[in-house]
Image (cartoon, rainbow over all chains, first blue to last red; front, side, top):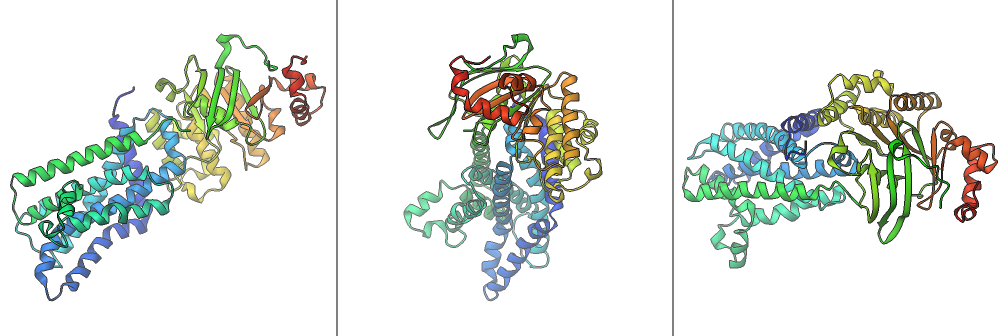
Length: 248
Length: 253
């Protein structure tokens, strides 16, 4: 009864979250179209430097789901807190991980579809090419979406309004984006930044994607995967700690 | 101390002793002792800010408590075992606005492990059959709060804590809901219902009058009228509030 996880409740929660997303047609359209449009935009921004698009394109296919899921999750969880449903669930026989894993499962489904659509367009119509297997990039995109979700769940605990929640994206994710090596190789950055980037989850997410795209699967790639999974687990555990049964 | 009617322990669904709840350095419930009868509809009355919601939250076990003991159905309040046996409806409807009534209830039924046909039963109890397939966000305020109430009825909990469940409902519906509450009580369910509408108080089997976090009376409606020599509960409440000092010093009956 006081199990850590109840699979049936995890599934029911995932189904409920998907029902909510499905009802919001515009959100579905945005989730599917935004990454595609942004990638197309980048292709023409680097019209005379196609090699730049070829370098940053594949990792971006994998990083877009992370950003989107981060934002969607932090808002969804904030709504759950403010509309009283979280308190209702906390007074029911639901384990905290049931809720978090339910969200994780639902958003993994959404992220898979998003990554698939993005990859189809990017590697088809936009002429993006990778040395490594495309399916690996898609798989990493889904894994990154789960990382984004876990981080979003965690930061939502520190937001008391939607205004705050949306700003966690620029506050938490943007700096990481700047230092992962997308804009400048990490060893070209100021030494303290390079050192700091070693402690940021996105560094590992980006590196794994870049390596997969370059077909450079070495020990370092598996370390990236391990660190990423560790971050998901940590964020979920801390996220669970922010769900309180009793409040003041 | 207070004008409390003694309830034999085996008949009490809730036993509270010296409950102390503080929020922001202020004592919301300074020292509250109370016993609530099993299988009855107990009305929790008091002006807003008197501590009704805080008391209900403490009984459900979602409120941080500074001191005191709270026994609910013979177990310490907030015990995981009670999550199946106690249901709580907050003032604001705690349901998903972007799901239909049925989808909401199906989800909560899965979480509670209640059978699937329970969804149809509770929709019937709150009279929402015509709206069952409608998205909650498109419902009226009263229909939304009935959806929230329906969710609490899932799995037939032994104790129902309802925070102002009839706000914004038309008189017919209000009467129907009170009838439902009594049917549930006849079936052995204990109900604690807060309200600030005095005419609803007369529908209750027992009344608990709360003022500034203190119980100023705990008795059936008739006994309160008799004791205060008034003809309606509004006057009875005013008399009790005014004479609280006398009653507290042992004047009483």
